[in-house]
Length: 167
Image (tube, rainbow, N blue to C red; front, side, top):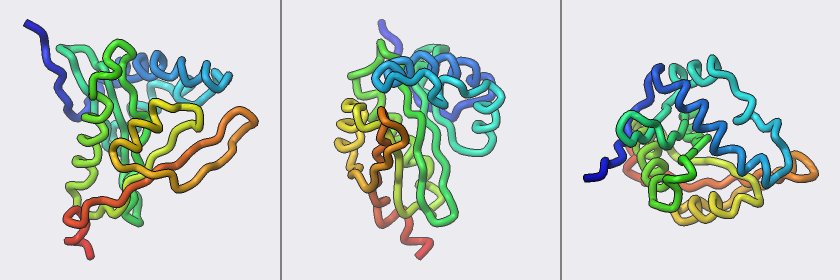
């Protein structure tokens, strides 16, 4: 009998597994853009621990192993910024990224102040772009950050019920 994947809030004890998973997952992005100095590959354990206390961090577990993670926070204007959605390579293409994206949207939206969701990815990261479009995100801005990389910002409106109470 197989184990099922569970999604929950990350704890400080998850920080090291998140860091290792992040390093593994961003190797393909670094290779795609020819840049191994990207922030997800150079982020420190202390920085991840700080994110655990300052924002919302979710993990997906298969047993005791963290196999996916995502982070997010809501800013003062009601924009929920989602970042570092990572899924272990052996767990990709099974819907886990979409489940995690939905879970972070739901978690961030429970406060009732979210008007928009926003995230970004590189212009060559086709699987990311496909996933985000599938979940209702549309490109709203592109910013060339180097000769090799253009960041594509995607956004979608929150469901009206999610922010009606704050109107």
